[in-house]
Image (cartoon, rainbow, N blue to C red; front, side, top):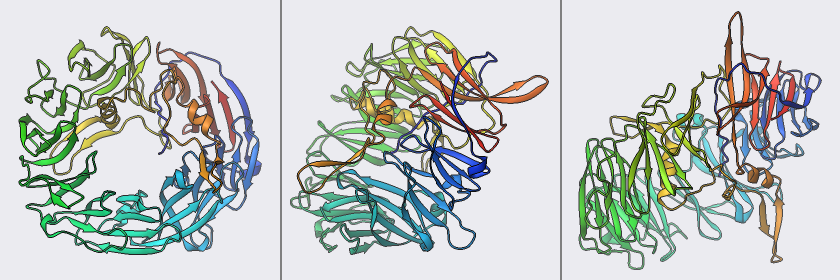
Length: 618
């Protein structure tokens, strides 16, 4: 739901290039001191200072609005409502409670103000088809859910969902909803929080029923086939079934478990897959009975993946595990042992691909035998991209490059002993396909181009800037597992990419090549108003979201440069991905600069000396 802007922070050379300063604005009079700047979804630059909060047109620098009351806003509370011209901040007045405020970034109108209630917004869910945003609020220790009407820009209702269970979670500012929200009927909204399940009247926000379980709810699944709500409770020996209309317990007596519940999911035909420590079975929603007389069991059962050939059962332990293919009737087709902890498993056209801490291969669907002639061992999460010319998945890890054909199942090594500047085994590399050039391998401080023939075109390491805050990082470090005594390093983005490729999605909304992929982000809001037509509510960001997917041949880079006999300086540069050459650069005046990089319009906005805002066009 939320748009991510990937940035690199690298050291540039001392070469000199030109760039165009499109505008400059001194905000000393309006704000005295500018504490920070941010960019709203519509592109406007939001500036906060000692004398209020204002918005500037990102193209001209003209001040669009100025709220003199909202002084010295805490930067950490700024939250963009992605895809809409709204943002949230928290204002701490000299006297009174902290106020949570939602503003329209285009005109400065306050569309919601908690005033003396002390609400603080922690997260949100956009229900596009209904024109509603559901905001999760905290009022001291109380959890609340708020419905906000986008068409009318007004509050519908706020309902109380009990007290927060942990001060740690409260401070993190994450969503407190564990399951949902989802609808079991047009007016019945279901959410699950820890050991509580709530049914909410969507029209007025009243809680129609709630159910408290003895322990945390691990799974909450609604079946349209029988209008039943299935509740999987942690370490429970029973699967709970509720009537979603009134919360009545309608659990059949024959759904008692032999072990402890792990998960409940659904397959394509609407049947439920019940996974417990003693095996897994299939529930027919029409009868609420198990389909198989005996559950299928493997050691260390952890997950079950439905497949057209049946079910893929996965057992995971720290040093060993197993993968089994089970028929739709619950019979074993094959069961293969796996060395090490299998942290990634997915079905492909030729078999089940797995990556463990000891080995990686594909198990064919016929007998569970290895498809690859020899194992490929990944010591960390490999960097992943897709070569559109060769129609192959590219994997790079530990100085080696592989080409993996999803159709044939073949994998071949095309690069060996590739030495990238300052890249170690645990360096979380991310890959990107550059058309007609090769594969960009990068992190926050590395950038290299590996050619399809296995040679390196360029490789550079750059020391990071001294201030790296307020920006979205490229990679997530580490992949830790609860109860498992090790830590797998790498970028979690690569796991997501592997899943997309394995399911035939050779292009995703994150791709930045040729601009042929469609974005899944919200580019506007349209709702029905009773006359049979769809009416536009917002469309201010559609062009920006579309442009962000068009070819990006270059990468914005921010760095700190050390100089002999002179203080260090900061620069923002633009590097060509194909050649590695610097195209343009901007020198920053402050040691700890505050800036916004707009990769959509190739603009950089800088707050220097805490009052001078400038815009630079690359």
